Image: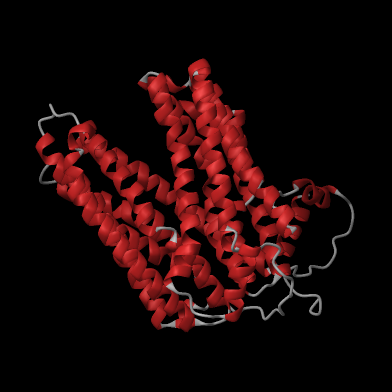
Length: 503
């Protein structure tokens, strides 16, 4: 049987779409794990070297940077990922440069405004954010203003990172977006810690890490713009004929028309496309934090920490999903820009297959050994209620894994409004269930609300894709298992992404 599985896997590697998604997805997952470990190591260094109070100030500053930064990017970064992939697929680097200049102007001026506004507004909220009796209280306003200045570099770095992702440079993207800033912050923390334990260095070190990541991302992106033969090396490997099939909804048809006509995009069009992406991302972030805020209103801090640990731990099962999406997204956009429906379907099929087999084993470990999984955070997290919460949240995460790359597919094919509407519905459902269930069931109620909301978002998007695009994003593992265990002779491999004439 092992031999048969090996042969089947080798056959799959002859499919160029599968090979690219597999190789870059695996490397992206490995880099993501390094980034996740770096994040934990950063928190350990802050806690051990600088103390709990410094950790609290850092957490507040990071929250300000993340929340304001999403508005600063305004979804333009995600839109650029799609346009770079679409135009790169046809070798139109003139359009890539033009679109980037439009995006850069939007993000630069918006980021500059938000950075300056936050810098001057923060002092009026310091009293509400921190304990006024703290001996270092007088410095906290300055600490937050350091994060405010960093907002501009945070949004510009994010734009360059997404452009690099659009070129399908997955390794560079993963290192820059998930690892470099944290590794640089750790290095600065350790260096400054040799001379002083002042809390200032915690905030300054992380902000310097953001600047380092921005500088590296900007360097790579400018290099690719000046050397298209390097930046565009991932495109044009197959010369498939376009399969002319009209898009089934007006929004997708409009974006497809722009891509196929290869006309320059203006500022208004860019904002019209990016705003729904920003709203969907922001709404998704809101519903993940609203659970904690509502729970904190009704439950003691110990219960809030258990719930936070459970949700944070179960997110480890989706690390491969995020990495696979980072390469699958540009491939979706490239196929969509060419109106190559066969290639698009094959890319979706290979991505869903990869997501299932890489994420399910991690999720299975969580569900089979929930108590041990929670024990890794300490004995205080192994009670029956804590384990129940972890299992419920993990089951909710299963919907995310089983439905495949639904939101990425929608965003990369001109259906970003659909993602936004489902994200809005998710927030409404999540808040309503939390307000109903938490007063009755406590953290278990919060877990149920999260699981249901996440299921609604992913299943809803999957059904929308099926009925409007005719593509199923839900992978059936039994078909592959049957081919492994059955005695039927394996057929020669045909690259599913090729068009009918080539087959």
